Image (cartoon, rainbow, N blue to C red; front, side, top):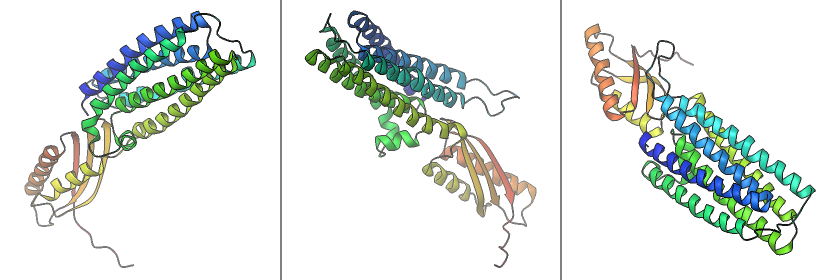
Amino acid sequence: MSTEDSTKAVVMALAANLGIAVTKFVAYLLTASSAMLAESVHSVADSGNQILLLIGGRRSVRTATPEHPFGFGHERYVYAFLVAIVLFTLGGLFALYGAWEKIRDPHPITSWQWVPIVVLLLAAVMEATALRTALRQSRSARARVGWFGFIRRTKSPELPVILLEDTGALIGLAFALVGVGLTLITGNGVWDGLGSGAIGLLLVVFAVLLAVEVKSLLIGESASEENIRLIRGAILDCADIDAVIHMRTMHLGPEELLVAAKVAVDAEDDARRVTRAIDEAERRIREAVPIAKIIYIEPDLLRPRSPG
């Protein structure tokens, strides 16, 4: 998944959420609907989240410095984790607070009754468009993996965030439609509060799920099984390398991989022959897995295991 594809999906989602936030907030001012207020804050939080993702993407491409010799690729993961925090606090907890207030003091929607329904339907169309863009951008990277597997395995944080946000937004709009619709039908404002509460719980669940996934990336994940297989094969294709004793990989960013390996060479090889073998291994690794940017290979001798 290229940075350009991720950025396109983020910008599309940001444009949609800014427009949706404005229309939802106007609808709230006209109707005083708790569910509309929850949805307004939800869209504002999503817009802020997309801005955070764009900032993280821009900061991650800075050149490495002596203080940060491996670069700033993890900035994308840091800002994605901030997204989960914003979604949990500003989105989920605020909606739950609004639900509590509305259920404690319910009141029906008496003015501009048609406005929230129209706004929610328009918002659903815009959210579906943004979600379709994210699905299209992630289709090539997903390959044969299901959508949940893609979210779990991808090393790029932007598209999983957008996919979760837009999916959550569509489900939240459905909750809001049910809550507002039942309030209009029954004249009981409790339904409006329950709709807001359902939105809040949904956002909290999605925020926790997102935080768990991004935390794993932030700590440092290894390369995919396919890339590990390709790297190991590239090393073993070198004539003067007998075996891979052990190997470690870690993503420094979605498109930057650190590879460290200890390889077995013949005890009779001189330094020049070992050096040529290591250079060849590095070249083959970069050809097989282009995102392998930093490679350390240590030569060693195979030692027989002690009995027992």
